[in-house]
Image (cartoon, rainbow, N blue to C red; front, side, top):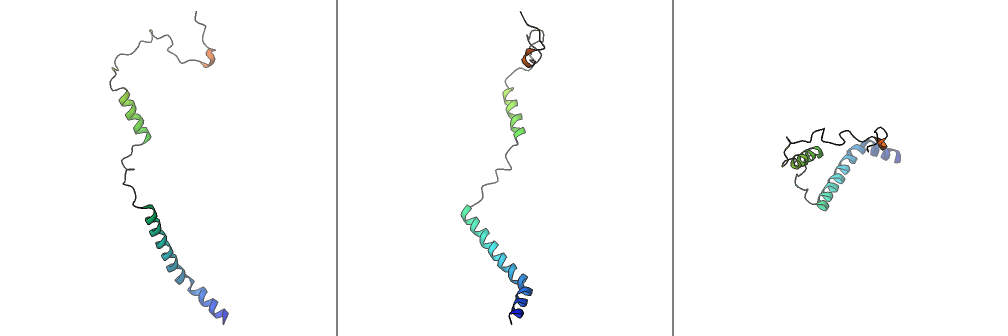
Length: 93
């Protein structure tokens, strides 16, 4: 008798498991929604990327400057980047 009962349970397992899993998932999602509350408004769509924020900041920094007035290379004392430990530069007197 036990063999017939186990064979019936084995053959009908998908029909029993799916509704049970569906109910457990539904209860879990409703519980999660209740605990978390309403989702925040969709502010993520209006957020700018880091590169866009950087470009905006750079534009604001140079907004008030006159970009046509630059220092001549002849007037600059050091117009090349500093070498490591100044090994490649002659000593200035």
